[in-house]
Length: 293
Image (tube, rainbow, N blue to C red):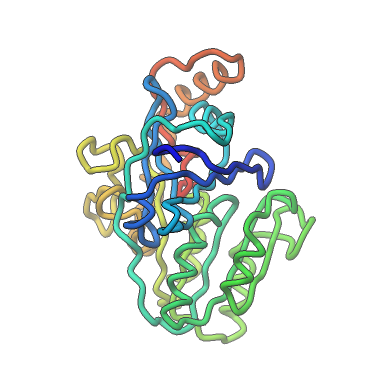
């Protein structure tokens, strides 16, 4: 196998793909919570994807992403046997893992992909896990079987009620909290409004809550400053200080404002991609990144 070669590809939900890629060094070194930054072609943008798992012996990393823009659309079109041009990693700080007690892990949409490696590490550390898997509809629910293999209890909810509970992940979390069940730690990964809602729900109860953020990211090494976020009133860089932060300290309003900065450019690039043209210029990966929901 060649470096960065795609060895397996499948569509696991509408426009959501699972790739196994040959990247031996990354496979050996990666830890839960870390990600890679990749580039599909020499004129393409750089965008991050979480490393869902790795096989150290085979030198394989697992990537799961949703094709929502030009760059992830180009990646989704690649087939097994083709090579991704650049993959840099593992990047970011590994998740802080300890024996908290009872943990609730929450994934919204393809935010479930980065939840899986963290949930695995939490379970291995001796924690009891409750998993909440949220999606728009039944067909968009991903990785439910793998979540059930890790967690002691799993609840699925869909916006339209086509599967599991009807409603949002916060509805299920609220029920668990109000039942009087002790919760020692919450992890939430998904759309930014969802993570903000989880943070506001756990705040009055003093439950330690961590989120994985998805700001604009270019180099993944802290040099460009594009991924800056405000946490506890201080500027942090998600690529080197995160991507995980204390949810109760994150300025979500500023984060969402920055995520919208290149919305017009992203839209134009997506239109050009759909018209089978080569995208011109760069558009940031917000909305496309794994740990970006």
